Image (cartoon, rainbow, N blue to C red; front, side):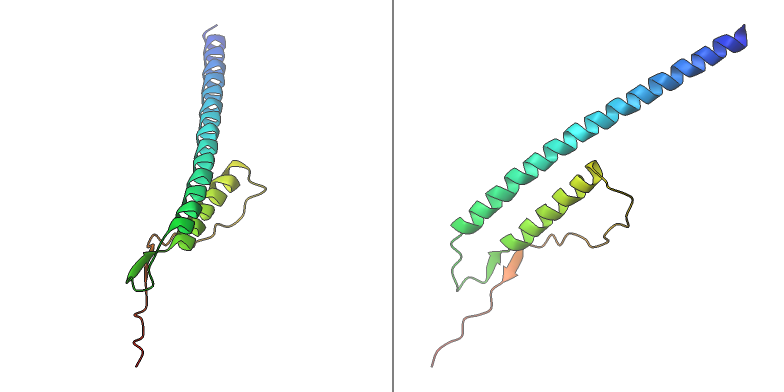
Length: 111
């Protein structure tokens, strides 16, 4: 009798653990999908900011919008691959740059 009760308890515990891990997976998928939507929004905002930027040629530094957009797309792609993997593949070891300041070369003085 106690073996049957133990087996039923074990089976019930496994069923609860499996259903809770599935719920966490659905929760994670929902949050990652939300992150993808937010990355799309950020990418559009960066594109608009790049168009509206008024960097003067004599400024020493300017913001590197193309590099930021590449990093956003890279993050977006990583989340997409995680959410819908086709098969196990080696990871791309390259890292995000994170430095978005460009040095503008000094203007040449005309004689």
